[in-house]
Length: 331
Image 1 (tube, rainbow, N blue to C red):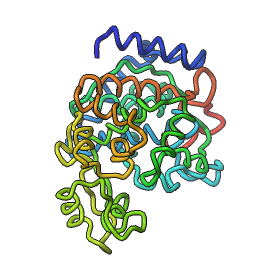
Image 2: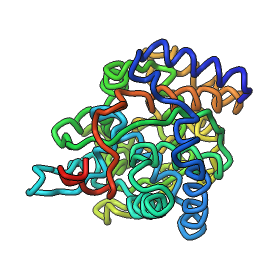
Image 3: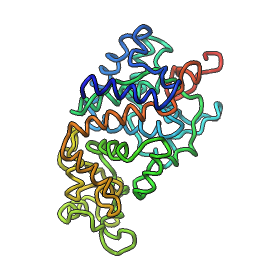
Image 4: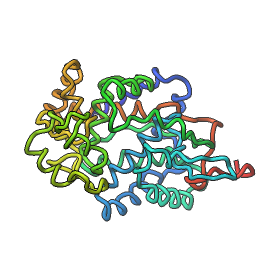
């Protein structure tokens, strides 16, 4: 992405999201924790050596956090009766989220370098950016300066799009966040890396929507492979590549897979195969035809999503431990 396009995107986002977002800045930690980007990169690079799925895990945490009350690190909070915290982690949409131990490692390293300065919300945002780039994807100029929530919202996790929802239902959740169809298709491109368990798509393989037959939008050869990996009545926890072609690289093959009816999740394939939404299929075709256009749109989405209702100024806190709120005395 060119410096001009990044700057233009940043200006547009600031105008759209108002004064609180204007407090976010790529240089937010330049004076208070100048080594922050290097520290985050060092930790994730080391962790990524032993976990090829790390990028997919962390960006999913970022997405699931931002869709509930904005990007405030609320998803990272553990259950705590003493603090009145009912964790979002235990809600159904988040049961398969992972990577929290890496976030904790980053936080521990930053607490040594610059105590009580860098928020957990910013750690997740920056780690996502770095990991996408390390896996071959784009980078973007990331506004920083978010603060951490002192509350969780388990009930609010219904705002997170689910793997069994229709395109209409998913799009409505994006619209509720101020995002559009291009954001939806671009963000779905994060499924160019990562894995999904059989239980998230096996209903497509044998008795889709109680028809007694598989989902007709699945390529027949791909269907056979998936049926072998996820046999009827078999364990639902087996992992499958979201992108069967380049499963660990961040590229635009996700979209060519959809064109070839090889979208793993129902919510993937509907972006291309929903008959009454040629506008959405056209975006898929656009990104399939140009990786540069996908990368640009993905960076734009990440900036827009990262600016959803951030806590800034004196709102919230800077947690010392990402899984717990600070004591009242330390705020």
